[in-house]
Image (cartoon, rainbow, N blue to C red; front, top):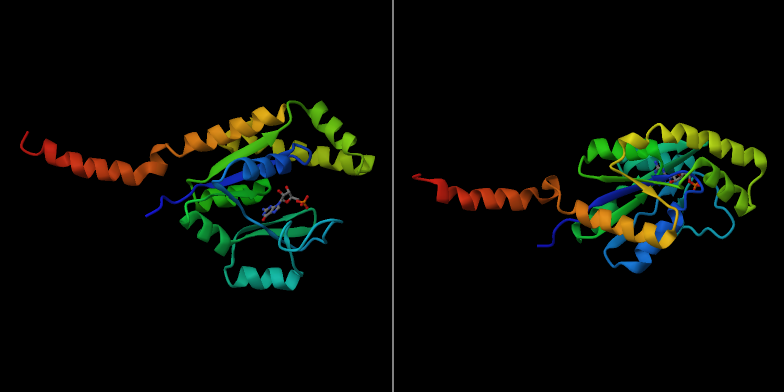
Length: 210
Ligand code: 5GP
C-alpha cells in the first residue's frame, strides 16, 4: 500500500511569487499535485475553466457547500473561493503531496480539520520589495497596489501561525528550500505514526519477561 501524501498549504501576499513557486515545484518534481479551486470571481484574461479555477455562479458554489463538497472555503475581496474535496482526497490516497494555494482564513480551517497539514507562507524579503514587485508588474493602478499592501499588512498578522516562512528572494533557492522543507516534513513523528506503532508493537516482545 502506498503511503498517504502530505497536504501542503501555500499562502503568501499578492506579489510574493507563490504562483511561480508552485509552477516550478510541479515542473521540477514528480511528487506534487495542485488542487484547482472553485471560485465565484470572473475569469481574468487568459484564465481557463478547470485550469486556473473552476469558475462557478454563487448558486453553484452554495450547492457545493450544501453537499459537503469543499474542504474549506472563504470570502476574499467579495468573491468566494473553495477547495473541492474529491480531487484532494484521491491524490493524497495516491501518495501525492497535494498543494493548496489558498489565503490565510482557508489555511487555518484546513489546519484545524487536518492538523498534519504543512502550512507554508511565502514572502519577499521586505515590504519595499513587495511594493516594488507589485509596481513592476505594471498591471495594477496605484489604488489597487495600496489596497494589496494594506491586505498584506493584515495577512502578516497570521504569519506566526504557519509552520514555515519561505523567503522568496532568489527563485532557484526558494524552490529548492521549499522542496527540502516538504521532504523533511515527511519524517516528523505525526506523519510516521504508523511506523512508530509498528516498531513499538514489534519491540514490545523484547521487553516481555525482563
Ligand atoms: P485570485 O483572485 O488573485 O486568483 O486569488 C485571491 C486569493 O484567493 C489568493 O490569496 C488565493 O491564494 C486565494 N485562493 C485561491 N483559491 C482558494 C481556495 O480554494 N480557498 C481559499 N480559502 N483561498 C483561495
